[in-house]
Image (cartoon, rainbow, N blue to C red):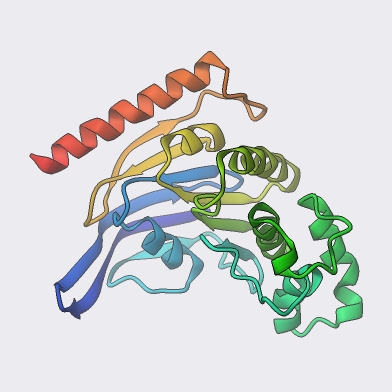
Length: 250
């Protein structure tokens, strides 16, 4: 679906000098896959996600799509829910359709279906301040899904949530992925989250970010955290990350 070929990204000098966020990053993303980008803070995971989204451009290398995404075919869920505080849940989900010129009446069924899909039927008219943190993130996910994207990009969307809510949303996300068949690229710095969600865990080295080891998950889609295979996968990823950090310090 997408080939990322020797991509580099350097940010302009500031007080601390120029920052090389990414160096010679090459990665292939297959249609329908669930890829987790895993690495320490500051290793360029979010930068790479923004390049995939077209929100930024590389300084070197290129991104080659088998078919260039049309407007609305890439959904993006940020670390914060980024909802309009004065707008209802339905109005927030309607936003990307409104920006594309879709009439409110035409979009209503799609908006309400998107909210129902993330478990928020009955909360269409609720304001963000009336929703819990997990519910606000569900609205954000519904907003990303309402255009029926081919690609769903997620930048640590559950990082600020409590463990109970995070586990529930992780399971719900897997169910949505199976239902919709879209391609997911998910940024995280949690080994446990990457192991539970992804079919491919791609580890990035400390800045400047490069692709390190890649581990394919042996788990089936309907997985549990008490599955011995999950425990073994967590240990394998953790050992690979430890080895990468030791190599980076050498």
